[in-house]
Length: 175
Image (cartoon, rainbow, N blue to C red; front, side, top):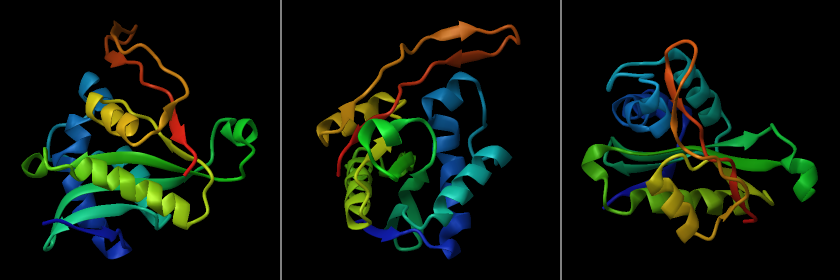
């Protein structure tokens, strides 16, 4: 049975290692552009994850000392959602990740639910997530999050020869 905890600074390296083994290689946009190899570090992604964890609002599913999954939640500071929804802060779930061994047990849904609860507990009026994968889209829909915008997901050849996919735009809900 997984226990859920707020991610502390001391957990940072274990969380990053989990992400190297799962999210960095499995996330649809990362996979589309062959951004990372499983288990390998990626400096820019790790900087984003470390900065997000520093906000102190992220949650992990744990089995003993093993990270089974994470929801990295950070304070959103971009776009014009602030004026559109008349709020001064937004909690954004930037990453949902579950290890291969722990998938299919509802951990991602529970991590997302707990992230929404964290948003409520900390007084956020809006919760945002970019759901780029089919599983995360189903989870968001099942938890009542409303899709604000969609982008078609398709592979396109760019002048550089890279393949990329466009992502889905913010899915949000008032906590």
